[in-house]
Amino acid sequence: MTKLANSRELLLDEEEIRKLMNEYCYAIDSGDFATFAKLFQNAEWIAEGKKPNKESANNIVIYEDGTPKTKHSITNISINVDEEGKKATAHSYVTVYQGTSDFPLQVIFSGDYFDEFKKINETWRFSKREICNSITGDMTAHLKIPSLTIPSAKDKMK
Image (cartoon, one colour):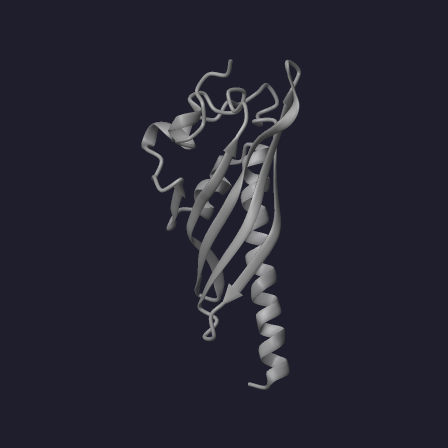
């Protein structure tokens, strides 16, 4: 393969991975937990060094419109695809905003996503997402018991 063809393939891989990263945000924010489950069906999801237990699967507060009323924003995205084009890693910052009728719009979480991907049958898939370096705000309007999902989160705010 020529250097130009390799560059084109690398750009296509990076774009497909970026779309996966964004799809996670869209799935959570729209309350589409079937897509969330599909994205991570063969992947680990780790928060602050711990795998959330089964109870955390139903920990998100869902509002009358079927969503958690959040917006996950990922920035500073860095994607590295291995030379064989079969594995990749990514690092990004995440900021989660939330606002409801009785919870003013605010940042409820900020941290880092460290992701790993595998290319299976020519399609990129998550193999791991690790959430680190958490800075938590008031997550009580988003998670029924915040510390079940993000261990450092406070379950009650003053």
